[in-house]
Amino acid sequence: DEVRLNCGITIPVIGLGTYSSNNDRVTTEKAVHLALKMGYRHFDTAKIYGSEGAVGNALRKAIEDQIIPREDVFLTSKLWSCDHHDPVSALKHTLRNLGMEYIDMYLVHWPIKLKPWACNAVPKEEDFEKQLDMETTWEGMQKCLDRGLCRCIGVSNFSTKKIEHLLDFASVPPAVNQVEMHPMWRQRKLREICGKHDIHVSGYSPLGGPGNAWGSTAVVKNPLINSIALKHKATPAQVALKWGLTRGASVIVKSFNPDRLRENMGSLDLTLDDEDLIEIE
Image (cartoon, rainbow, N blue to C red; front, side, top):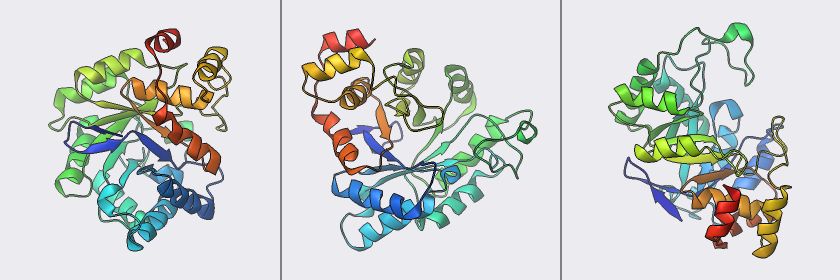
């Protein structure tokens, strides 16, 4: 199950997110191996997650053991906000962490700029630069593409306004905008604008991010989602994921638990009817 992007390559619609608060290398590597076995082909990491090394290790081992060819894996990483001045160097650093020659997708993680030494996931007030000159950043992203360090470039956490601003000057449009998206935060207007410009929306925290400091269980505990799940003999998580997939998005799910990994994949087999979708909207 893949979707074709405006840059010509395809992206598998279910991805494994590899951010975890305790960021344990062994656990992450195990999860990636397990996910590969279950058919996951899309892996999502970022400099700031600290998981690039583990993800790269697990994927390289699978490629070396001929479990999977490199071209069957879709790997995403992201430019952290303190590296806007030099995306090429940042991506080269990411590639060294991963032990890879290229990644498939490189995303601008946030539309904000931090001072070059501000490398914390939760920046302090004084770490912020006054202004983000997105034109310079995007030029750097396009260089990454020209040099073959990645196959596609995109953005993350960009609003409709920021997308439209970027399109004013980008000679290569973003292929993806990765944003938080789930049945309780549906991103309708953003999906419309992205659709109009052929930018693929990728949804993170598609289950509402339970287990994250900012997340909640409101999505999987929602009575409507539960009644739709019951009707289809599915789980609430599968309904939430399938809603995103039906809306044309890909979903990035973060679970290292074997049963959950399997359950999330099972959302591909579920079919929601129009009535379900109208109720969710």
